[in-house]
Image 1 (cartoon, rainbow, N blue to C red):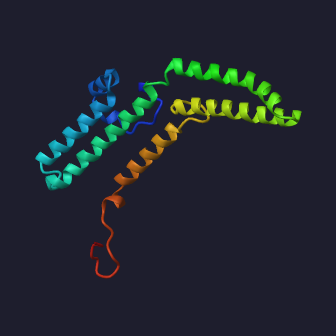
Image 2: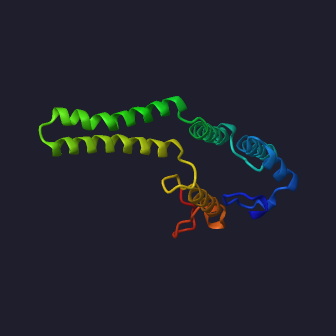
Length: 183
């Protein structure tokens, strides 16, 4: 893993040819390349008889791969297209204006000083808090405490894939009475 400077855990990268790894590293869209490789592998395996599955059933695999790429593209939209800068600046300006004007308005409208102070504090604190929460949600991928745990999610997916490759997972369990397959 360290040889390719990948921050995520990768399963058996050494099994690929060096030229394929190099091509993938230099590719501008790694997901599309890997998707193409998986689709070609499925089609080749079907042609060679390794996947004796009827085409309508196998088409479900292609459909799931397609859904995965759609989800990857949705994630790209979140990470690549940030909140418009002028709108963010306008929100910051309005929050500052609200922070200055709210105590004055509350002091004029409310009879007791402590109600003015409390309503100003709660209002200003709530709006600024919402702004900071929105800023955290805007960029969910990274290393901050509030970001999605991408490394842990990748490790979980890898553990699941390795579990599915174990011999016991590949065999259908048999019943105790007569060694029939459970259907």
